[in-house]
Image (cartoon, rainbow, N blue to C red):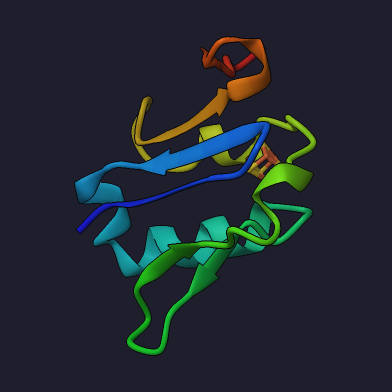
Length: 85
Ligand code: SF4
């Protein structure tokens, strides 16, 4: 299980271990201010394709799980990865 989704400007990727972790999925849903993370019918992590471009680059999701578990790629900047600042 992994979860990823791309819009025009932003792509969000959640690695296999992290996406399969129900607790972590819940945390992601809670931290993102623009609701990019959602829980599917079976509680699985999903990326909202509707909201993904609304990402504010707030970095809150990068603090969830192990480093690198959640990646935010700036497609408008040649796919540069958002770093924790
Ligand atoms: S950086 Fe902020 S707005 Fe963007 S996906 Fe992560 S939590 Fe949501």
